[in-house]
Amino acid sequence: MPDATLQIPPPAPLTSFTEDEIMFRDNIRQFADEKVRPLVREMDEKGVFDPDLIRQFFQLGLMGIEIPEQYGGGGGKFFEAILAVEEMSRVDASAGVVVDVQNTLVNNALLRWGNEEQKKRFLPRMAADTCGAYALSEAGSGSDAFALQTRATLKGSDYVLNGRKLWITNGKEAGLFVLFATVDPAAGYKGITAFLIEKGFPGFAVGKKEDKLGIRASSTCELILEDCQVPKSNVLGAVGKGYKIAIETLNEGRIGIGAQMAGVARGAGSTRPGTRRSANSSANRSATTRASSSRSRRWPPKSRRRG
Image (cartoon, rainbow, N blue to C red; front, side, top):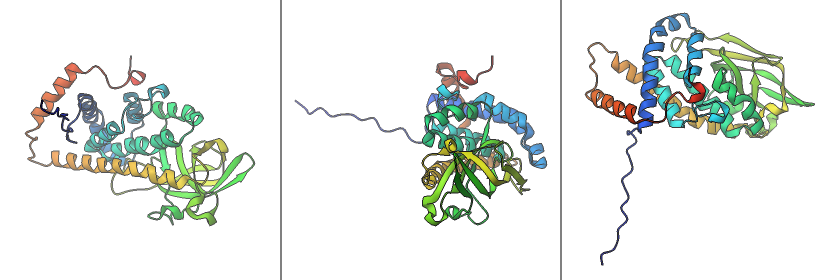
């Protein structure tokens, strides 16, 4: 009797999308072309991101892709967030940045390091109407981010933070900031702690917005902390473990930056004078049609649909 051989199907190539992923990608692509593209030139010239467009991002579910449905999010995957960043960047790099920081840095940090009380308090807001920003860099700690000087001192039931952050993406639009400060400069990286700073906290202010050469609609701002009072309950993760949060969050954030660059490159290639659509475009449309007819799961999720 011949030996039975276990047949293992070959893994799907990384360039193959599931039907759900095709539908998700194409919905984002259509939205970017129809709603974002007409505003790109004006937003870039003025250096201001259209607030109504951000509201549409929330309505579509773009700002809470991985947030579980129990908190009002889409309950999607990290890969879907990356697809969204690439498709938005194809049309407008600033739009890609807004979506990227929200999903791969801020939401990601809350999902991985937030306690249950913090998740219940912040994730519904991040999925519904609150932009986030990630505040690590300082004047003397750019490439060496762990040389940061922003100080957090425990006084009673609050931490008091003093210092300045520079080049903070989404600074103008954000209502919540994942901000890093040290509780003990002598401890080096072991003193770094992550805090959840809300825009209305006493002693916190958003300062100068940079006038940039590119990606102008995306705000890049200074943050000022002068005796900013932060409750102990707003410490993200453990005290002194902020370096771990920063490293592991940025690892995923860099994938988002890669998606931004891929999207920008695709957008540049498709708008060159005389450029023709790829021969694969008709095959992609056929695959999308099949996915549309057979798909049972819809985007945006029920919690984000209109009507």
